Length: 315
Length: 64
Image (tube, rainbow over all chains, first blue to last red):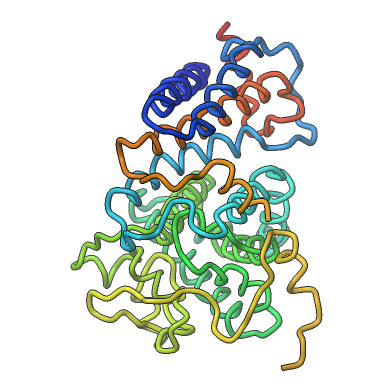
């Protein structure tokens, strides 16, 4: 980890020097170099840790930094190299709002984790079926993992469809659909109630059946897969399209075009939508428009957070 | 709006393709802010380190 910090400092300085030489406007380069120097002056990667660590409340800044670095390294290069929408910039409109959303789920990590786990931990003692857990535990891990993703996606389908169809719930979920352009960070725009309810609900059936390791494996997978589904990433593996959600599939879920409204609720397996009659995927085409139909939502994190709680204006 | 102000301060009208210094500039600012944040985390681990990361932070304190 200390090596990583060192590498990031060196990277900032090298990139800063390159940019300062190549570009007329030097603000970006200077900002990078300045902060990297500040980081070094403050002790760099070799700051000793003297304090006793405890399990009290803390702000998850380290988690935010690590996750945004990881996600950027995975998804930004593929979005830049193989975009579905070539003209879309990394800094498209409302990019800062989405970074604030990313911050808002990572900094209060303890609170969000507690809230997400609350229903599952409360109910799992009631719903726990030891026979089933033992039987599933004996299966090969790859089968267990497939079952875990399947159970999760069925639960996701149910709660996701409810968030679309129940008007009170839609007010929360509409915020996730307010993005007019999709990329990996757009996926993190989600009202805290939406986020906690969906994740919490999915965990209820999962905790009844699967082992702790399987849950961790699933959480890792859904984090990557759901983020990838929002990516501005063009290539599609055609033969895999009926079996696994790829960006093009989830982009149709986010379109404002009437033909695809309330379609493609599944986040892992498209055939779940086929089963329930909500599948929509025209051959080889990407949507032209994204966002909300006949609805306007205020801009900015705080206004959006309070928006679902305000009275809807009579139309 | 803050986003507009940031775009005005840091952006310009020059081309932004590879080799124009745009990517290196963006990466420099990104890495700079990341490293600064990381060092702040090392300084205040009690306040800024998530408990689930405590084992990693403890590892760090052993490493030096």
